[in-house]
Length: 213
Length: 213
DNA sequence: TCAGTTCTGGAATGGATCGTCCACAACATA
DNA sequence: TATGTTGTGGACGATCCATTCCAGAACTGA
Image 1 (cartoon, rainbow over the protein chains, first blue to last red):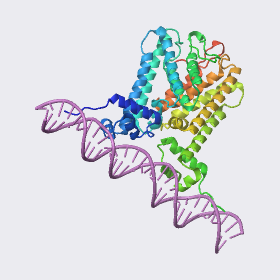
Image 2 (cartoon, each protein chain N blue to C red):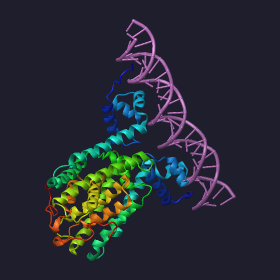
Image 3 (cartoon, rainbow over the protein chains, first blue to last red):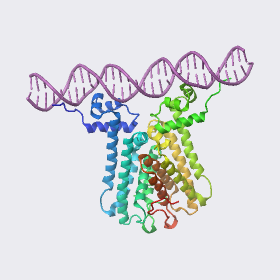
């Protein structure tokens, strides 16, 4: 009976995300989104409620994606490769920021910075995302400890929190203007300082102009 | 000849900062600032130009203050206490975030997140601030290396970048919702993993429910 | 006391923006 | 093909907000 929708919801959300990502919540006009998606305001409001609801939707999807990327890289696999997975994940995150020439940063950080203090939904969702990332990192660090790549005397919870902080911190200092090469070095250094069993020394901690994998 | 101003400029800037800090650039109305400062719009515009200029002023002062705090804690002093100074600085930063119950975050991060991609002045100022902090940290790490508290084989530049990232990252994950205790632990852990000379092990890396100073 | 200059604060302006509304279009069923 | 229901999109109204303007106040120097 009803007339079917002429637009693809996912595609519309994608375009909306681009807008919010580039210009933030307050800085994005519904007209921008209408133009970017090709939808009229009527359809937009009919399908998504209002600006706030639309943002919550986009923000939520983004958070889900952030966790999914981490899951793809981190969850599962043999202990022997846990350290490699951790390394690749941290480097991937650094690379993402390093390549973000438009300095849009991460919508998660941007949204939280702009709205967390007044929007409980955004606050809760971002906290939830952090917790999920923390859990993934902790699991992987434990795996690396079992395999002897990380000193098992160290608290995996604490190391996970440190790595999460470094990953989010890279995003922050990148947006603040540090150059891409430095960002990549930070990822290296963070991984290099993770304590090895028996007080051995990891390579790659010392002076070196280029990245070492 | 001229009628003198009836307000204290510093005080007005302080109130304006509170507003921008709490609600961001776009989220703050000039009426809010007028009300918060008790000034009329005429005085406000007469004294500071427009909203953008006022924000630049506030933002610039904030950046200056951030560097000054770091200078107070870090610059100068005997090599023997360099490690202590580093530790106190990192813990102070973590404490600031941990105590920020209103989740306002740091105006530097907030401003950069909101405006860096379209406002060259903000972008330049935040980059400059990062560079200044980096230099201070590097100097202090070199001092700690001279005294034997940090492995001198490590690149002070890289370790400085790592610590800066951790400090800014703590702010980011704090705003994203991690609890204060975790934030304090992150500061501990970051300091604990700094490489010691000769592959010795620093205490405080391992499991421990509470903070260790 | 007077003149000249700057300060003050609220009203007015002009533009922008959110959300609604409505006439029309498109589709599924009978 | 006819009909009812929902999607569509642009025009519209109400609100909000940055900025300007102006009439009067406050102060200094003569």
